[in-house]
Image (tube, rainbow, N blue to C red):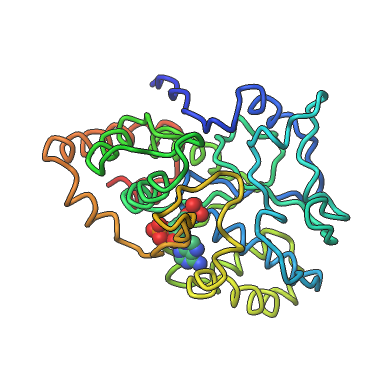
Amino acid sequence: MTTTPLPEMPLLPITSVETVEACRDLNVLKGDVFVCSYPKSGTTWTQNLVCRLLVENVGMELPEDWHLSHSAPFYEVDQYWKKKDRVPPETPIAGIDKESGHQMSFRVFNTHLRPHQLPPNARCVYVIRDELDVLASFFYHLSNMAVADGGYEGTESQFCLDFLDGTVLYGRWQDHMEAWLGKTNKNPNIIILHYEDMKSDLEREATKLAQFLGVETTRVSEVVKSAIDQCTFAAMKKERVRYTPKSVYWKKDADGKPYDNFVRAGRVGDGKEFANKYFSDDLQQRRKRDRETSARRWRNAGVDPAIIDRYLL
Ligand code: A3P
């Protein structure tokens, strides 16, 4: 059975079509890691985990003023690709980090692009989170982001509709999953993590990730134990300045302070409450139909049936 192609997805105003084209042509270095996701799926958490594992693995000290964006910048941002010959971001390449002046020896990117927009040999960690939890989290994120950078001004109910329609940044959640999960099935260059599994047992998930990243078998346990201390919700909330993305501007409150709640609630199941409150009956029905259609499409795309069961049925 043939399936119609997925629609194109809306991009951030800080990402041009030319940048997306260039993103695919990056000369991938051995050791590069791409943390990939639909927004709000636990990207920052996973970036932190990847960086901490790599840092612990080589015994590197992170400087006092370290920011996650120093080690794992947002990939598809025009400012990194401005040079005439469109070379990729130089910031995290082995050696001296240009922005902070610190010694770094690995390259990690985070991206919300789809797999066909990335270099074919990219080593990727794709992190997934429940659709409604993503929806709620995305509403709070976009409502607090500067409008010029793609921030949202509508109501919660309007956002629910826009999210299902796929007119929000990065399009429909179900389409993003389809593009990635059809591609990832049995691809040794891609590991899938689930936000909910990380919440229930971070050490177990970090162990899988460490093995994928090539941490030496005898050191995995020690490296994981040190790395996850800095990756709990409490640790990241406390140090939230290090984790709040620098690639966009945030709205300011009445006192002129920019949004400070990026590491927000970190819960599983939040989205159900949000949907119960803001989805009309029509929209509930519409979502049910969308999920049935997506389940068929995901099957055709070769997505692992266990993942279809878990997220759509
Ligand atoms: P909530 O808004 O539901 O709290 P992303 O990095 O993809 O934008 O995802 C952000 C979401 O991950 C936010 O969800 C944020 O609070 C949550 N998050 C960040 N760090 C986390 C951690 N250490 N543990 C659990 N959730 C975390």
